[in-house]
Image (cartoon, rainbow, N blue to C red; front, side, top):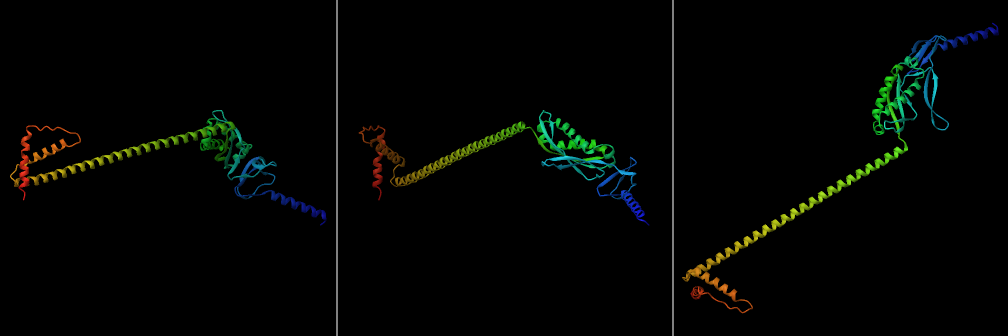
Length: 329
């Protein structure tokens, strides 16, 4: 066997191995291929080892989207053609876009989209460029949803916006074999003038709340002070009342004691008078009359005292008093 024959056999072997290798397709887990036979859909390759007809069966090429970092550090979106269809959940980070709210405020918004290819055949044949279609659909749907809301609602209703966008995109991409799991708004950036106005508004709201709190504090302070003064006045009045009651009780007790003392004195005098056979009433009347005369003549000024005629009977009892004291042993 000459050298030319050996070379031919080697070439035939290489071609045979190449043909066999071209017919062997190993598909990793969570990936798939859409195979066309003579330009017509034939099958979707499952994960694992697959055998196809070389040069007759050919995997369909699709577009994929990925974000790369450029030379200047900025992120750039790059589209590439590949036969690999990734069945895992994917996330698209869309660049910021300008949207106009219902109250005509231009706002800058960027969003995240989480989706998954559930039907590889539809994702290849129902849409030409799936990543670009999803991006444009998300942008237009976001404009429509934000256009129905005012700025304040946009800033405070992220969950509502996410839910509405998710429902709209899921319904629109269903015919593409795509399932939209969720949509998340990352940043909502109003214009600088609007942000300054919002900051002033928030500062004014904080000042208003502070003033309200101060006013409520002062009100409570005045109420507590007045209640304290009221309670203090009540306590003082109660103290005066108790003092008056105690003083009245003291005076009443003193009068009772004085009356009891006078009663005992009168009783003693009466007992003594009875021993001398003298009228007690006459004695008491004479004693009171003498005390009255003593008060009448006492003092610095000279006084002329006129004794009424009826007083002679009282004065006559003085002799009886003298007799009473002389009768004592």
